Length: 91
Image (cartoon, rainbow, N blue to C red):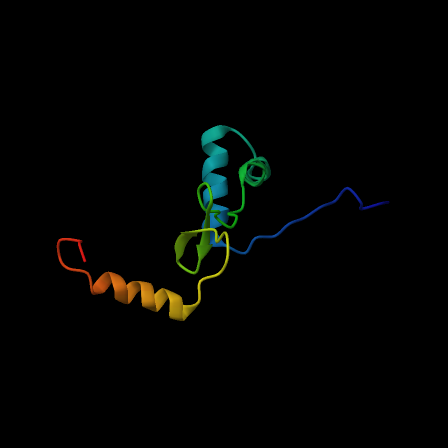
C-alpha cells in the first residue's frame, strides 16, 4: 500500500493550533483548509524600493547619482562657501 498521498505537516505552536481550530469552528472549514488559505494569501515582505528615482543608502532615501562624482574636498569647499555668505544671501 502506497503512502504517497499521506502528507503530514506539524506545527508545534500552541497559538497556531488554537487559532486554526477557532477559525475552523467559525467558518465551517477544516483546520487544514484554514492553513492552506492563509498560505495562499501570504505575500512575504520584499525589499522596499524607493519611490521614483530615489534609492536607499542606509536608512535614508537619496537621488540616484548622475554625472561625474564630487570629491569630498569639492563638497567641503562648496559647503564652506555657503557658510561664509552674508545672512541675507548676498556676498
